[in-house]
Length: 274
Image (cartoon, rainbow, N blue to C red; front, side):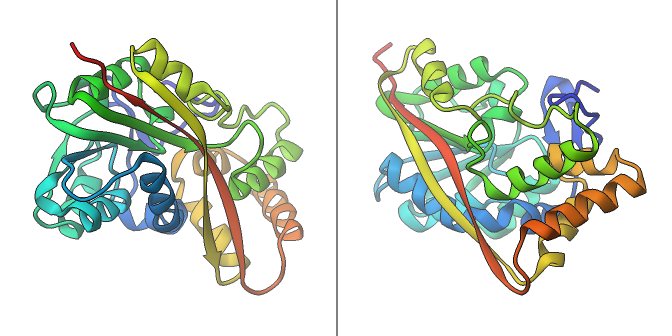
């Protein structure tokens, strides 16, 4: 399996050339999904999702952003897609009435010009072919409609949870590549991809999210699930190295409950007339 961060990612599978998460939905919920409620609101506000729009969530995962879209435009106006069957099932169960399908960003199953707004949250970095994925998002968006995507700020360490983790990992494994190579994780990268795809009036910036933790174990345990590049990086270490990473993270965090903030880069652009 190809590694996107220089570390084998057994929890990421690539059926038919697409990247997908293999773990159960509840593992994702405890790891990254806890940021979704605040990120989904900030992202959809920045994009301008309002009632009466037909929208598509590309790479919906278990359905966190889909839920926010449903709350704004109603389930009949929401479509969503993800390559992971367990995420598709969870998204359908959590968002009854939405059109949730199994598939990949690079081959969206809807006709040209179907949607008013097509969004992708925390997914562009995991597309096997981000350029093709963006082109497909543009294709299914009507002329004058909006295409938008966001991805965690890895380049400037704005995603606190991941910054703390990768800082600790590099103390025991200095060659660990981390996630900075993923598409969209540096400022302006998504906007550049949008312009190359022919989108117009491209605007970019950042949105913020946060997640509460009851204690250090609530922070640490989800990494052991092996979700995504960071989880797989942890599983690749020896027990002694894992202990060192854990204690380095513990030293960087307060005792008791705490909240971590996170910044994501985003861009939105307008689909031109064909």
